[in-house]
Image (cartoon, rainbow, N blue to C red):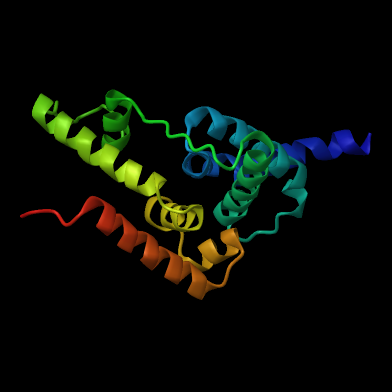
Length: 185
């Protein structure tokens, strides 16, 4: 009976700690896995791990805690389910990408076909360049520039010193600039 009594508290804590981080967790899983389907599997497994470990969470950074679980789950899942030589990229379709970039549909003017084509080309180039980064650089870049974590949180999530985080981020950005090129103005 004791397990039944603690279950609602665990669920409530899971809802408070993990649920607000699910979109960030999915985004990290997608960047690491390279496609939506694998990211969904990884996120599901990570949620199970988080639920089982929720009593061990002490009021630190919930986001860093959840992303650490997602990262570890992603690597173990990829090791178990995918050959190291396989790399897959999943692209968002144009309407999903545009909707995500605008933050929804409401109140936004309709873009011209030319603007959509340019945005799609730029987005595809950037996504391809990010996907081509070595995994250590890619995850650091995604955690900082897409997820918005600070250096200390990234160091915690990736289990590396803060200096390594800064070095990886600088190298990742440098490689992106080289891959994309300098914009002409």
